[in-house]
Length: 367
Ligand SMILES: Nc1ncnc2c1ncn2[C@@H]1O[C@H](COP(=O)(O)OP(=O)(O)O)[C@@H](O)[C@H]1O
Ligand SMILES: [Mg+2]
Image (cartoon, rainbow, N blue to C red; front, top):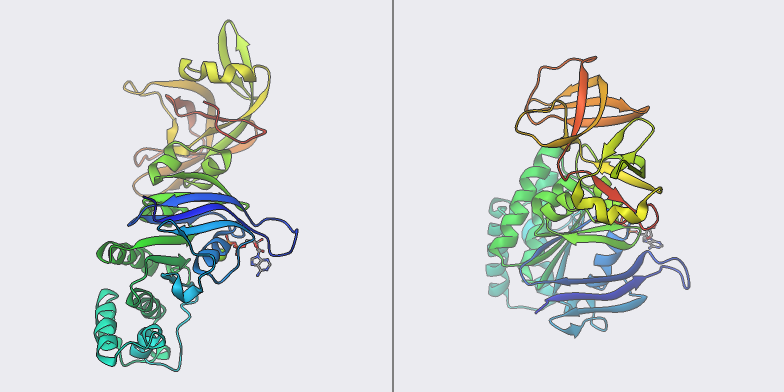
């Protein structure tokens, strides 16, 4: 049974105005770690604020365990929210901050003390219980916010870019810890981020959002290797997917993707799907790591074009090569580190089955 369900969820901030969340449908299972991923302004915060009850919905329904929660007050919904800004009280000690939601519930003192202790342990801040937030680092304050969210034993954790205010290194350690806490507490979590690498490393399933609409729902591997739309292919992966505008043409009974600078032969598995696009323009996408710079014996691939290297960006374990194809900058990621120089001539091949094609109108993957 689905634990949390969003049904045709809609939001407009002004009556009759544009929908910033547009007919969102989603089912989340108990224990899942869900990540809402998308660029700034795509409706992530609005969606989790509607789930928490901080924002009214304009249409649709939200159900937890098959029951609508729309007429429940935020505190009665069984959800806990962790904000980017931490939102902890400066005049209270860490203990008082974590205890605050339990005091509102008027629980007995000894139960409050026990639960605060357990939450502080889970968030690894037992030693800080007597301190005030002003005497703590950003990472420690974030842990307080986490402990305060845990202490109420919510059905669902909602986290809105909780790591954005931390420096890059701490962000990576804290995200592992958040995942550990999620596992230990047997929690169901929704984590919001605009950072695709954060989403990839945390999520059981990623909900890729764009302009108030879900573009794709899938595991990290699915959204990466099986991107459903041009937006998903462009938003997920670093460096991002290279796109080319091509025409689908038939030459000597073979199908080709033709641009001003290459004629790429389309292999049999996509021929049928691309036939309706004959003599039409489509978008072709190739991820940087699926362009091979030499054809090695053990690699099957189709020739794309010849070019020269404009720049090399060594990354230690591998290199990023920047070339130009038809005046367009294209990035290539080598599979291993290579001592290769600017100006080197390359013969580019696309790894078998790795060229993606997208309908220009719907932006959906053609297959
Ligand atoms: N309180 C508000 N009043 C009016 N418009 C808002 C309000 N909050 C957000 N918006 C608009 O709704 C859209 C989605 O915002 P938001 O949910 O904050 O996106 P995200 O969290 O993905 O960055 C944006 O266009 C934003 O400007
Ligand atoms: Mg936001």
